[in-house]
Length: 367
Image (cartoon, rainbow, N blue to C red; front, side):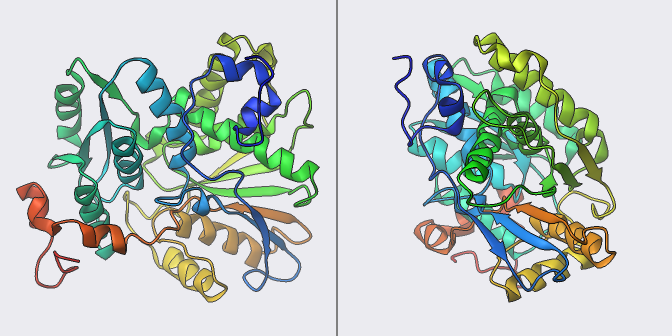
């Protein structure tokens, strides 16, 4: 099969055709995602472009789709029938894994921990239930290891790391980095100087760093990657990101592609100022960024993409981006969840510990 790579295949396989024979892959999303210039959000001295990974899927978008294309294929190859994963009660990763995992024939168990509540989080829970995910709530972080261990004990289970950010999942964003280089080569956008994105479990940033290092057929991009931290520092920082990039490159090198043995990664800067003190907690700066983005037709949310955009806007306002071309990687799901939620049975199907979040002042349980 060597060399039989089409435009429908991931950019990774177009850049490195031999990997198509040895790296498991399951088509799920719509790629390449488009790039577009956006006006009206930053001063005229800044040229802003958007990478629309919010449009990566027809049933659910965002940055998890690319990761799941490789994670689900790997789980299927290993004979798994059940996926076990982890996230907050409003986790986009948990929902994406449930949607695509169930569609691919897997049962999905998700261990979920508390996070600040809002209507968006409640909608995510209802969507999890509507697609048939089995949720295992914990009282807090201390209960996570034991609950995860119990779920992973099943003989037919495959572990999907939080955020999909294992080396296998991170391959999806190596491909995204190469896809971006292809788009630059086709003159769909000029070469950016700075790239902003939310930094959570680090897989998106680690994969981009690896992919933007280039390929034999694609010149590298030395733009500075700015990861805006949205989770706790011990699990989300520059060291963790670079280490995951190195592990992912080693995995690809182990598949026979020696190009990945000695990569020089582009610059990385981690921005810590916009976290807000707790996972999932919205901040005034993030909420303002969401509102300003909506005014120019860009739909964000306040805990990941809103914080990343808040950092970009603050740097632009301070003059740090004057004369620069900036790319924002839009990693939030752009598909309306309301039709999916309406197909479910509401909060009554949730575990008792989660049903209590649907009180009289919250999102209606039957929405």
